[in-house]
Image (cartoon, rainbow, N blue to C red):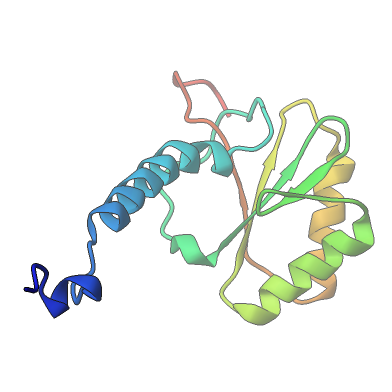
Length: 143
């Protein structure tokens, strides 16, 4: 007498359980939401006051370049070792997108040499759209 059916020894599942996949997707979403603001500001800078905080440029057309008081450059959040590499990355971004706007984030105490280096590179390659990142004015100070 046979007690077990022939089907019980080789049962395959034809359905995929997506619950673990959804859990992973939600965890990754939360991680990206938390870390995105920190990625945008990679160097602690004291930006100068002034300027217009409302930008009419599309976010995908902006290339953020940060210059610290120590003379270090960051292009799109990555440290650049020297001026030649800085130029290579700016030119590559311009070739990928002709509408690129160079947004310089420099500390208010940084040397003018840092900004001059970036603008010289842009001028040599025909990049004419610039922007300075600044903090909003807190009062009506004379310009």
